[in-house]
Image (tube, rainbow, N blue to C red):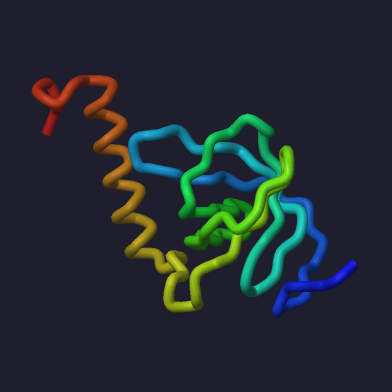
Length: 116
């Protein structure tokens, strides 16, 4: 088999979450292979994904922005954005989590009924 990756991947078995949009639920996945530039994920075969996603690996405290580059059944290849695209800074994650919580609360409570 011809290897097309720039970086060698390491086999792993980690639980992950794919964030597609702030107002949609996260999609559970399993991270199977990972490198500095990408990862191979397993998720439900029918899951709908946009071109760009955020992959969170809670056990490692990692959060990376990437784009879907291939899909085969329940396997998905994600190419990470450059190191400048890493979203793993504490402030950025807290701000994003706060925004997600506000949007989810607005969906449950309703925009006119939100408690301040």
